[in-house]
Length: 246
Image (cartoon, rainbow, N blue to C red; front, side, top):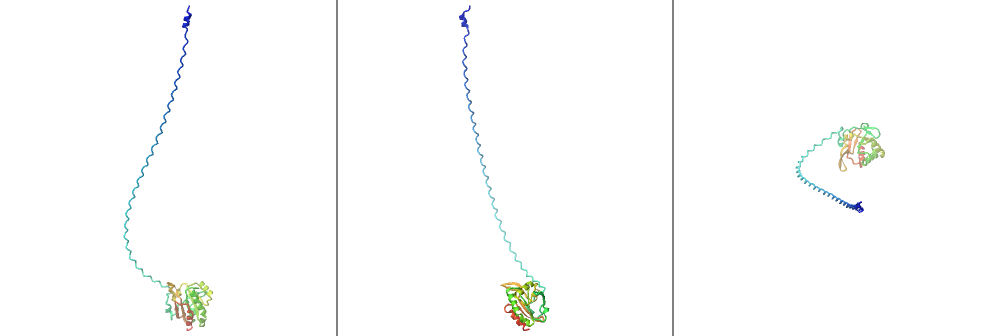
């Protein structure tokens, strides 16, 4: 018989508890990655040195002024051409005395045409004046107006002549109550024939215009007396006195 003790002895001893496994050491935390050093900012490129200004070109020496050309001797002025003689050549007023008076045919402010021939047999006082309704011409016209009775006693007539229009004459005659015709010589033909147009001195200047003149023509058409460059004061009385001697 088997020994119980042996059996007991041979009984399997309880297995020793396995030592608990050692806890694995916690894994070391990975060292944080080192921050990448920020890339160094590239140094700003150096500004290119400004290009040197080109040295200004030297001014060219001013060209020497050419010697002024000698002035040409002024051309001699051509002698003034003689004015063409008008159709009716002007005659010196004084040279008409004793000569047949130049004929004329002029429109009057009364609407009629007056000719020297129509006054044949009558003394005619023909006077030339510059312009209607101007101071000297007005005095002269009014003096002849006031003396007309003396002319009429000898059958004489008075005729005033200027280059004004018949319309201007009519206004002048009406304004001053003139009692004789005023004739218009717009083309100056009669003025030239009697030498009553030409150069005269006016306010210190030489001008061309009517030369105040008067002619006493007898019934035969002959110039008996002439007055040129007339001074108005007392003129009408002198002309009538001469008419009374015819």
